[in-house]
Figure 1 (cartoon, helix red, strand yellow):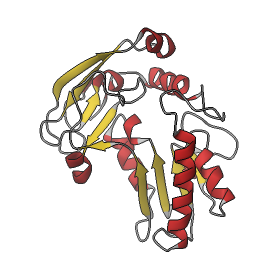
Figure 2 (tube, rainbow, N blue to C red; figure 1 turned 30 degrees about the horizontal axis):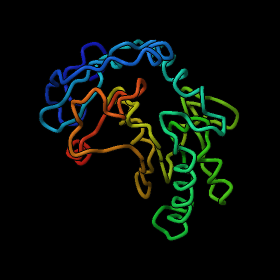
Figure 3 (tube, rainbow, N blue to C red; figure 1 turned 30 degrees about the vertical axis):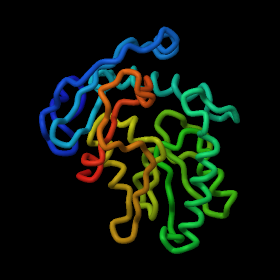
Figure 4 (spheres, rainbow, N blue to C red; figure 1 turned 90 degrees about the vertical axis):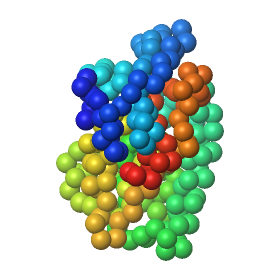
Length: 222
C-alpha cells in the first residue's frame, strides 16, 4: 500500500521499519522545496522507500517531478546529478536496436518507453530504424501517447529507463507490467540495484526526486 498509511512492503508485504533520514543541502531545498526525507526499510527483502515522498499529495509529487526534470530535459547539456546521461542513452539505444536485430527482443509490434522524459531514447532508436512510442505523465509533448492510447494495446517491449526509483506504490509497478503483451512481450528496465541499500545520508543515489531503492533480493522477488 502507499500514501500516508504506507506500512507494508510492496514486494513481500512485510511491515516496514524506520531506517534513516537525510537532510538535503540548502541548494536542493531551494530548488525542490524538500528539506528532509525519512527512509523506511523492509527487514525481509531489503526494499527501501522514502515515506516522505509517499506521503506527498499527487500535486506536490507532480510539481517535484517537473522541477527535477524540466531543468535539463530537452537540452543537450548534462545535469549535475547524472553527468553521463546522454552517453548512457546513446549506448542503450544502440544495444536495444542490436538486441532486436539479433532476435533477443521482438522486432515486430509496438514498443513503448514508459516514463520517457523528453523522449530522447525513443528519438535515438528511431534514428537507428527501430520506432518506439513515448509516454510520460510529467513531461507531455508532441508525439506522446495519451493515457487512453497507452492502455489501448499491449506492447512487445515495455521499457522504463531510470523510472523504478521514482515509483511510489505497487500499483504503478503493476500498471507497467500490465502493458506487456502476455504472449511474447518483454519488460525491460534500467535502475540501480544493490546487495543492500546503505543507511547513509551521503549516498549519491538519494536525490530529492528518488523515492524507491531495490536490493538484489527485493528485485529477484519482484
